[in-house]
Image (tube, rainbow, N blue to C red; front, side, top):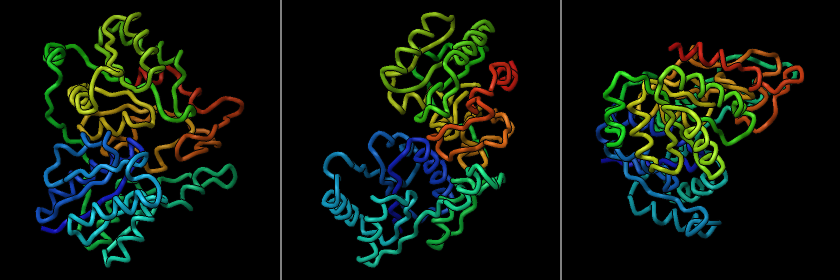
Length: 335
């Protein structure tokens, strides 16, 4: 059986997209085994994919720095593969690529489309057009390794068993909605006052709302909302990543920023309504299988200002994400 070493170390949403791609690749090539190299936290994304072996990278520990990456290279050589798909294309992965190339491995590297993304996000002479989806860019790496590969961009529902305490909720006719209110960069985050308003309105409609996120501050905010509003459940810090996927797989709908919540929904086949501010679905980061019609954003000549949401997007004195109203989200949820 041929083995392909696949590298993608971060961020969470990008790694989840890799998992969506590998699920399809494995079904189309039953003579291939994947060695997936990423951070230990993300292992649950790949746990249910056949013939995918997860190899964790510890960039702050034994794989730190040049010597650590050489140690990782020696570990990966033990799999006796001669193919490498670099789906990250950053300093760490490129150094590993160099080591593999010196050992006669066949290495193919992700084309991030930097010039196209620069044209999409620049303030003057902006070229506003849909770019190639990131999942297709991942697939291109395997194609350049010589494999035929066709992504269907569908959203098949994944059957996962929810935690026992929620079995009755998911078995009932109650509408279940997940909300991931946070993102890594502030210019992608729907204002918290608006998010609380949204949660309050959904609560009044007797929906059961599951809140997702990470970090102590986020945990406190979600705990406050769950105490203040009926039918709101705070999952932050309560469950493992695998259990969060179990819950998301059973939801009627997910609501997320342009962030990992959307990509986790894609991985388990749940529809996601996504909110966009400084970023834009045209940049190629829409969740795999999700629909453009489920993206909520206000068109403005200044948008997008950023691929990752780490830069402000001033739309006539208003930050782009602030242009989105609670009513717009409620209408898209369409209860």
